[in-house]
Length: 293
Image (cartoon, rainbow, N blue to C red; front, side, top):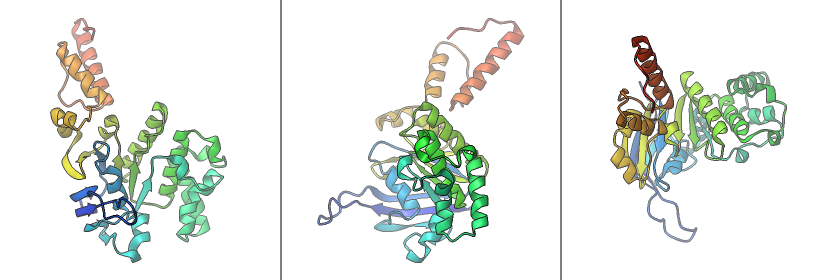
């Protein structure tokens, strides 16, 4: 599978002020490839460089050293900026900062209009994008009438309408309540199943557990990467970085300590529920008592 994004030895620093010299680099000689159609979660402690990396992936920031290529296009080439950003769309943390129109469907149309897309094609894209995030029935409402989760879904629709092949989510659920978070993660997982490349920046390990691969950053460098099962197996290393395991893994460990036999590959709550249902069904069939946790 070919890479849609290639990050090669990038270093980036934020200046302390316009007059001062650059501060300690936020990203340090970082390399990372993201394959087409992959779902990658990027996690790490506060200040590890997660959001800075996200902004480098679609040319909102340019590295001082190294380079970032999107579909073979160098992000430092000013002539390619709009092509790059049409390939890699970005959804930010605060939905209120992303909405620019007073009507939902107009907001979703904003990106394609700025790209000069034919009006009939814009109409089709807007309708499809809103249906994809279950917001079509709200198309004529004002953003102020929506919940935080609904606003975030509209922001996602705006990126979908630009037909981006890769979508970067920079902590999209950080400002939402649990039900709003669940809505957005369901949408993200649906988009991945439909073939979108997903890059999810998050500090919720339950969200990272749904990815194909987890990348852990620390002090602007790659600390570890692997499948969720591989990364979460390194519990001591994660705790050193003040990162916690997903609730499903911790609960499964507690149940195992009480003598309940569960498989080793439990990562998500869905995995745990399936394992418990299978165990319960098997013991009922055998006529055994089902132990209480």
